[in-house]
Length: 249
Image (tube, rainbow, N blue to C red; front, side, top):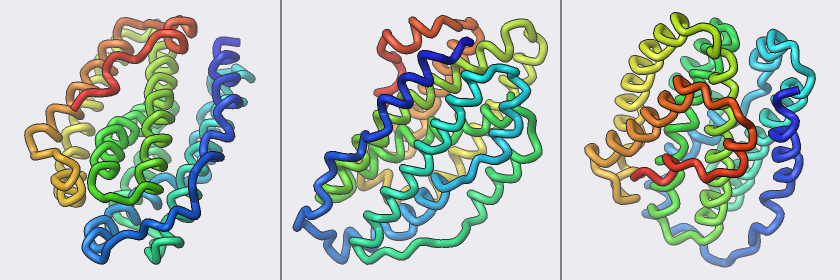
């Protein structure tokens, strides 16, 4: 029962968007709407997943507390998609049914087992840390800033959770860990290139040039890999100690 405290944390965080000021009068300017429209559509789509393949692979852990925690994690990701979707509706930005980048990530998650699936998820969550920080600064919309703030706090814990789980999964598989690290390096670099090409307007508006974008994400990536390799599998450490890498950039 290695995941009971994570389960408790996700349960305690279920009403984390309850304080949003949905009736905020401040609307996006036409310029701001053009800036964020395509980008936020893609990220909203990426947050929206049934998680059935992750849930299927999670059964290999043989831990009921992990299954419960994964269910709560998937629900939290779906809440992000729902909140972003509601925001977009209020600001006159339609949802999209799909995007090729999201399709690629979904295929990668479906083809892999639990270890690679979590590695792909961790990649997306690392990117989310810098993306929502940039999106927060890209407009003067107070509602959007509140949403980004809460998603950023959630992503802190999501990254911790995935690193913690991967540390357990690779604890007695040092050779497999080496191959996973190499795969993750390639995946991360490729993802960074794609994200910059597709979302650089948001990042630039949020104060990120290419160098800062790359360095910020790679710093988070490197510290994640160090924690996984060090096999820090104490839930007390994970939940009670601030995760030092998450404000990079």
